[in-house]
Image (cartoon, rainbow, N blue to C red):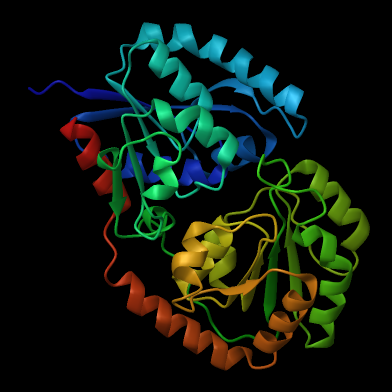
Length: 351
């Protein structure tokens, strides 16, 4: 009887929770995963929805840098005895400074899986302490070697991150309806790489009337935080739908005519599902979009408010043809993708 390899996986965001859930669903028989998280409203609700078994340590520090630092220090302190008592063989995160530092301090090999070298602050803290780093193939290795890794420590899988959980999902088929729906995903304003006043929230007062002028669409604004939810309901609740809770993006996307993303994950999901989408991310350039989604015409770039209005008008003025074109392109590219989860397990178990 083979001894199971115990892997500690630290999860900090809903996207990471989806990846971790896919790992649990497709883990080898000789692997046991233990998931840790932190107290963070959006993550708490989402993990409950997807029924991911986990143990919570510490909290999200919010947007203020002093509180971020304090929360990180306190979380590391809480994690140390837990890791020492559980006899893990190795650890994995999606760029968790706390998991990387605790693992390093306790002599535990730490692995990272990420498509986000643009997240400079956490990358500077976590990436240099990792044994190996796994990333989608459109992200160039030099984007990671800048943080101190050797090229031989970086392993690229031939897929994009959302493919890990889209393989597990069974999205509802899209059908033609009398009224279409537009999803608008608000930006991750608490993230260290975001710039205040540079997200899609800043243009909603113009964007929503523009969409309404182009047709009788149902508009769904999807916040990330409770603060965003209260603000969106108060300001736009009469013009559009603002969900009360964290949503399961894949099901909503599968029924949408257009997704306007103020971040990365939901826009990537739409792109790989063949749903017309616009990436509005003026704060930073995202590698997977610049190197893959935009060149392959799986996603449309918008970097300024006028460009966002122009691209929205262009897509919605001929939305049925656009849906067919986006769907055909997505089907072509995903045909050649490998399973990121299997790739990650293979690399970890080699070590």
